Image 1 (cartoon, rainbow, N blue to C red):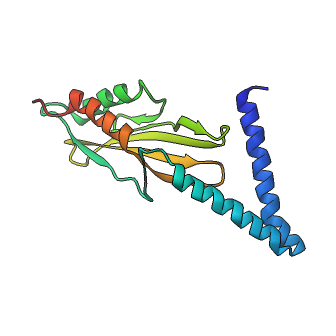
Image 2 (image 1 turned 120 degrees about the vertical axis):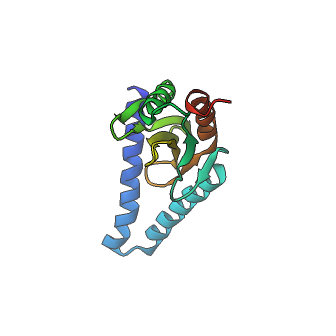
Image 3 (image 1 turned 90 degrees about the vertical axis):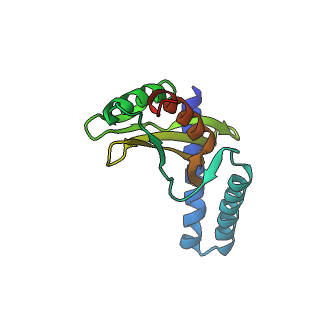
Length: 172
């Protein structure tokens, strides 16, 4: 049994336990089971809040960060150059050169607590309406199958901005 199979069976067992704990009180009217489920969920949420990666910034909506495009370079060329940089570290999910949009797949960068807690990041890139800037964001998710937090990754975003600005940003 490989680690992926082991991870998926562990996840399946956790889901079945959570479903059992959530449904059982409704079936038999057991208030204690509902309280146990609530306590387990609270404990997970508190753990996530306390142990999140230092570069993780929790927010409901991830803002786009703006990067100016070098004078004389088209937005399409800037997107292609930026996508080349990003694709060295992330798998590409979608690129549309006409509408100048790019997105990577979610990349699990770290796992915690016996592979049940994951930290994942994906990158999105697009051109501004005026086609004079690139907009980038580094979405992040931290948690497990039933409890997770959304936000963005400060370190990933800063590193990519530096790398992309060297290639498509204004010359100095």
